[in-house]
Amino acid sequence: MIEFLSNNGSELLVKTWEHFYISLLAILLGVIVAIPLGVALTRARKLAGFVIGIVGVVQTFPSLAILAFFIPILGVGQVPAVIALFFYSVLPILRNTYTGVNGVNKDLLEAGKGMGMSNWERIKDVEVPLATPVIMAGIRVSTVYLIGWATLASFIGAGGLGDYIFLGLNLYRPDYIIAGAIPVTIIALITDLLLGKLENKVVPKGLSNTQKAA
Amino acid sequence: MLEFNQVTKVYDGTEKAVNNLTLDIEKGEFIVFIGPSGCGKTTTMKMVNRLIETTEGSISIEGENIKNKDLVELRRTIGYVIQQIGLFPHMTIQENISLVPKLLKWPQDKRRDRAKELLKLVEMEESYLDKFPEELSGGQQQRIGVLRALAADPPLILMDEPFGALDPITRETLQMEFKQLQKSLHKTIVFVTHDMDEALKLADRVVIMKEGCVVQEGTPSHIVRNPANDFVREFIGKDRLVQNDPSNQTVEEIMNPNPVTVQEDMNLREAIKIVKANRVDTAVVVNEEKELKGFIDVDTINRYHRDNLEVGKVLKEFPIEVKKGTPLAAVIRKILVSEVKYMPVIDENKSLIGIITGASLADVVYESIWGEEEHQNGENETIGVK
Image (cartoon, rainbow over the protein chains, first blue to last red):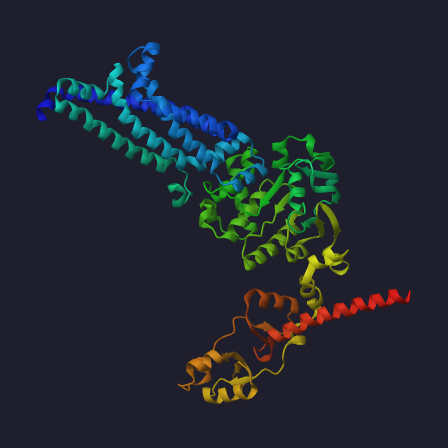
């Protein structure tokens, strides 16, 4: 192990970084798309079931198939990897945003409406802040999954810790597999921890513990 | 100031929630819509800030049809208080109070000053400004709910059963506070309730509705004296007896002036003899100067009769005492709300002059029912003579 680290230490760091940043980019894209979409769907209930259904179906596609599917369109490398992973990040965030915003107490919305808050003001100042605990839960679930799946990105030449795992598989070298798998787990754990801290910051004060848990 | 002109609201094409309502509300008037659920009172109110749109007819504020105003702007000029309070849990009290001023883009310091000023109106400390709603009691929360409606100083305020979810005692306090507030601020208030007591207490004018139509409108005393029909009479119900008839009676008129008393320094055995001789379950304890000390009841006797202590050692205190000259109406409310069985009446020296019991209260109620029937018979006879 020590021998492996002394030979590959700096490369390991680079690959860890690559891995981290492919996942993060995919999550960011997911957040940017899924949150507004989720809010929009609460305004178009009839469409909501349909859209969430479609996204759910996408989620069930085998991840290797999706990665492979993007090769003829986008070639190989990090861009198709990020885009493929992005598809997986959407569903949990979308579903939680929709559920969270829908779950905001209707009396509060009526109060806001009656006082003259516009639709946008209600979304921005009431619905999204009150739904943050649920939205954040979706982001955390998404992130942990994505960091795991990002190992497959190596398959289409995006780099990351998956490189070690595939190399280990091809060469029958368990040390390579371990060298790839352990950092993935560590990144996932640390990221989840950091997101937990972030959650405490972005969830508005005044929401009681019971609501946070929801 | 606020005019309803032949307003009709139809739901689902057929069901008329509000039927051809025409009403003029003066500036500064406190108007209460009341009726059983489904009578259209809430629909009527919500049409004013267009949370519900009218089907036919028009509503105008200060002569201007509300349909010609921008929806959001209209609502910002009308205060709105709901039964569920609806404070935003993620905003501080200050942010909640100054929500409409913020929407109207008031500068930060002006908003804070306004919030402070408003808190003073309900005698809450400034330290509440930075708390969150969940740290406040229900009564305090609804006080903030009312202040929030007042924040941008709207001339008109709509209130949808604002005190309905509070416990009776808090409700009463808030009603009193709010009536005071309204008198000093001269706001026009449209208030919806199903509680006749509340309507009679607060309103300048009561509008009684049934099935989308106005059954009767008028000042509380007018309605209580001249109910238009059986529906109104039944709807006013026994409140009227309690509120109207006993209003000029005082507690002395119905109290028992010779309650069974025992001396404070007697021992319990002597006291039991007195209680037994009079066949009562409770005796009032006084000292030599007839000053009220408390009472002993079956429970006390049962618990301490073996010890044979001095009465003064085992007595219980009355939860409520009333001074002589107190209007009966006030006492009846207290008895009904607090469920005490007896209430001693004392003079200015704390000396016992009598006691009010459930029985004396029952007499008042029966007398006024009986009195009313007699009164009606009288009317019939006159008609017969004609």
